[in-house]
Amino acid sequence: MKKLKVMSIFGTRPEAIKMAPLVKKLEEAEKIESIVCVTAQHREMLDMVLEIFDIKPDYDLNLMKHGQTISDITVRVLKGLEEVLIDAKPDVVLVHGDTSTTFVGALAAFYQKIKVGHVEAGLRSGNIYSPYPEEMNRRLAGTLANFHFAPTEGNYKNLIAAGISSDEIYITGNTVIDALLQVVKEDYRFEDDLLNQINYEEKRVLLMTCHRRENWGTPMENIFKAVKEVAEKNPEVEVIFPVHMNPSIRQLAQEILGGNEKIYLIEPMEYEAFANLISKVDIIITDSGGIQEEAPVFGKPILVVRTETERPEAVEAGTVKVVGVDKAEIVKEVNLLLTDQSAYDKMANAVNPYGDGKASERIVEVLLNYFASLN
Ligand code: UD1
Ligand code: UDP
Image (cartoon, rainbow, N blue to C red):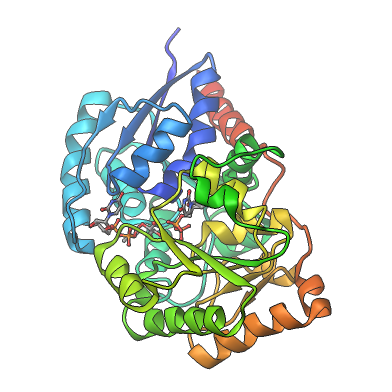
């Protein structure tokens, strides 16, 4: 009997992490032929995830170029996927989230009249320039999609407000929780001994990441300077910063934070190590999307160095605070958590508004039901 051909298309680190558990479930489903196509919008950071989850792509467009612009990647993904889709002829394409690969993957599938499933659908900040270009990417992917896999009730409502028909929307939870639960272990030991040697009991350990395009320039300088000030003024503070591979971010991080013996500027961490590190540190400072979904599971206060978030669930739960990109404000908020135990405890709630680890299963079920209705 003919199987349903499902092609998962992804290209960056966060998409790979969040698609990996779904790819595994697709592979297990007898009635599905799972095909993986990576654009490799990211190269090293993508490969690290593929290795951890043991995913071997059927197609690898190998597109990353250093210093690529949004237009570069858009054009190359569109052209590269055309050939792949004509060759593989999937029944359904799955894209994830809000990157250039996501939007262009959905567009390329539409051009071939192939149905599109959008995983992590319905997130909205309300501002098309923040996050940039992700807010527009997710809106465009939503317009192109036939199946919308919304992590939360709030995401469902956003899709309804965007004019999507309710019978195309499925509330599934976020596949990031599926991924997280697979890699976190109580007795985890890091391969990088530096991370084993840090005294997590006695020190106040800050974990930071920063990469968003709208933060490039002055906002990112402010963020880095704020963290530097906090580290210099508080003897008990140590900072771990796995620096994104974007060359301009690496240069600025080196310029402002390099050479400080309490600030560890390290390479991007493999996912298993990073997820386990979240569970050990005291405070997280980030502009990342995915980390806002993961850290609440461990009850770690997260200061989001952005002016908005499309993840209001963890803000409502009290674990995430959006603190903006002003240096003095960031220093004030970190100091509050360092000095006021009740302020810290109030944010250190273990909550998980993003799912029960079964999002991938639900998505596969939707696809199988669709398949059954075709036969
Ligand atoms: C991209 C996504 C963003 C996502 C982020 C996750 C777009 C427009 N942006 O941003 O939505 O949040 O990924 O991290 O889709 N690089 C490497 N090796 C890697 C990865 C990146 O060297 O493994 C360097 C390259 O020089 C590359 C640059 O980083 O040109 C930027 O990568 P790109 O994917 O264009 O943008 P990101 O800022 O990573
Ligand atoms: N992450 C990782 N190694 C790191 C930093 C982050 O594996 O050194 C993971 C993190 O746990 C989360 C994802 O990468 O799942 C977030 O990716 P990123 O911040 O690049 O993108 P965003 O989520 O902002 O789109």
